[in-house]
Image (cartoon, rainbow, N blue to C red; front, top):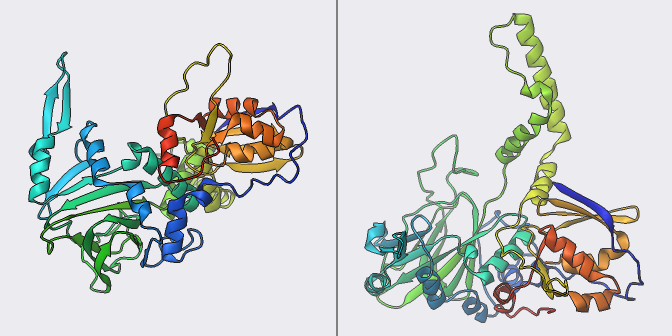
Length: 433
């Protein structure tokens, strides 16, 4: 983790009286997080992965703000996509990519694979399921939504989109190795959800998990505005085989939670810091040498297990996770001023620890030290919500420009572009910019 220390926040002008910004957080303010909690009857993410749950958005308008079929198809048209990120299915069978992709050649002979939109139109008209994985890498609205869900759940989140037209079967009955929240955005789809047949199954596991459970959790239609939580390992299937027209669009937010196996993998990396674990294993030595090494390794392993519990692994993972890609900052103009507005883009909410007269902020693989009196401004800058630098300086009475320049330079924040800004305003979020 990169560590930066200094006297940021000095000089120390008075803080605006009564200013309390501690509750302004992306995960608390994002309408999708609030809507999911209300629909499922949750308070926080503690119920994630525990039980199958269904609910309905109080405001169905949120569905159209998240994604529409035309926006999905526009994203597909404008990008170089190939399986497995983009897939098409008919009658539950995955199609050959040559049936919907075409190859174009640029002026200099470069090969570009693009979706043949005319062919895709025919397929959609005859009945098709189009699947696009990782939509949050293309769309600002869903990128911000996934970041809010990450701050809320403390897990990395990916969103996939499923557009189905006319009458066509879906995937066969299957299970996922991660928890899923399904949001039906448009139309209807029939679901069959069953319990697990193996407790806590994993993608890479000691045993196969290929026999579906017979215990039904729910069978029925998901309609626009419906929300469903499917825990890891629960068998499920979605289809429109009985429908003759129309379409369905839903998105799934995947939450791959960490397990004890992930903790042990992390411990193996931590072990590299101890010389006893870096030594070659005794193969041809004496019995006494082998016994001595085994005892030393066992003692060191016990010490490592005790000094690095699962909580330490989870906290280190959040602090060290680097932010995803963002446009680089353009050179500042002649006045030397930085961006007018900034927003925090760490994958998890930054951690604040006060130490004496300082406050230490960790996140995005960085650890920065500031004077404690800069805390009110830092709370807003690192809230995950867009912030106008000049306005925040007036409200807090601190040199926010210096703070903003530093957190942007260190990669915790980025200057707010119109494109990224649309990820907040597109869902009707109020923005202080």
